[in-house]
Length: 307
Image (cartoon, rainbow, N blue to C red; front, side):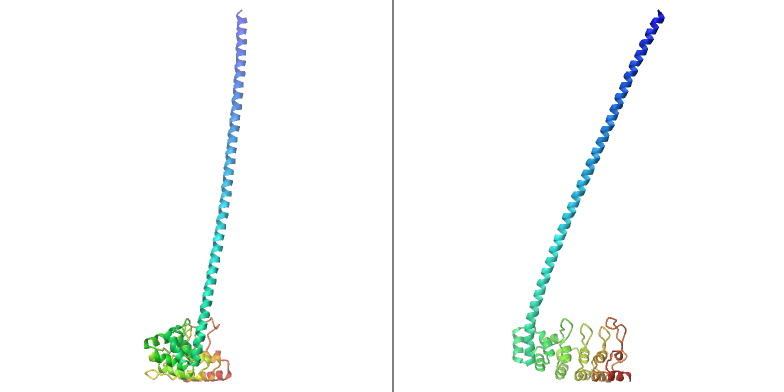
């Protein structure tokens, strides 16, 4: 009897064990499935989040590209506008310069005619009526070889005006006396030299290239003017002009006379003590420094310098 009950108890216990084991196994399987589902859900959420972030970055990149494209277009438009504005300003300035040059040519041509004809009455009207910049009067009177016009200016202008105007260079630092030595008659040059103190003329004044009046006369081969300039003496009896004055390229009057082939001018300069061994200094004009002999083209000048 006991054995029978015992077997029954064992059978019930075994069944219970199987039941609970099956139940636990089922619960474990359910837990695994839920865990797997949770992992799958989390992975999907991560993938979705990554996809959204990539789309956001893509949109931001596209927006940045559009913004940069727009900014580039705006810069190009601004640059084109500035270029057009600059071209317009340049055209306007060019037109203004052309108009000014045209007006100046009209005025200068009138002055040239007056100086050339030595029309003193017209000069007086120009000066009194201020129809033209008086600064042009001495320059043009000296340039166009009008001694009477020069005499009128010197004789009728106030001393302060004479000194100012005869010492006022143009845009190339050229004075009226430079032009007189280059273009005017020797009588005009002599007259200006006789009035150099009244007019405040500096015979050694140089232009922006370092050329003085003697350079101009020697380059043009104006031997009478050269003699006149070299004859000017200071209080000690020496030459008032610097006979070996160098330009910015190291050219003396003797260099220019030899280069242009003016034999008589070369003779006068040598008599005045010009240094025939002076050399040029700038390499912009000559590859190496040159003496007047090396610049001379005529055989007679070469022979004279070789003595």
